[in-house]
Amino acid sequence: LKAFVAAAAIGCSKTIYAVLCLAENAVGPDATRPDDIHTLYSGVTVEINNTDAEGRLVVGDGVAYVSKHLNVDVILDMCTLTGAQGIATGQRHASIVCNDDSIEQNAVIAGRKSGDMCHPMPYCPELFTVEFKSYVADMKNSVKNRNNAQVSCAGQFIASHLVDYKNKWIHVDMASPSHKGELATGYGVLLLLQLFVLD
Image (tube, rainbow, N blue to C red; front, side, top):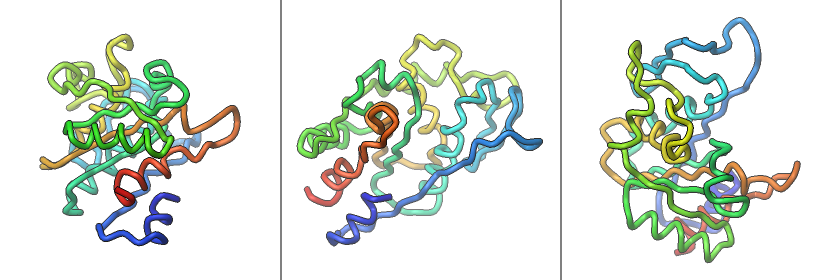
């Protein structure tokens, strides 16, 4: 959100949208339970096999909304999605998953310039989509094999909800660099500004 505010303050010649994908994790009679089946905004049905993998459901709805209603050249989703991100790229680098080599390279360069560093993960839909196989829905919300590139798979889950979208997409998992102990770091503001406004 602060990157969007800063972009407006600096002035940007591009049209930029900020779509916030927010949910409250609250226990109640309407809470999601294992084996529930949700129909996401993309129209894809999702069997819940992990109630702790809830963030990807709202982010999936967010990218579906953007791909359906906003005519954009790039969709970037940024979230604190997986604990596996810290294992894959550490405390200082976010993990990125992209469907386009140029945006991937630009993100890495923007990260180095800004200090909000990131590192690419494999983008292989043909290898990771099978992790979400379900017999009762279009897909499950979490992987079958937790040892198979979880960061890439989580990004692939989100990409599965892009609706008729053929342009650039980049997923940024900033779970570890977003905090230091109990305090937020502000990670992502400079990365987004450098990637979309300052260059």
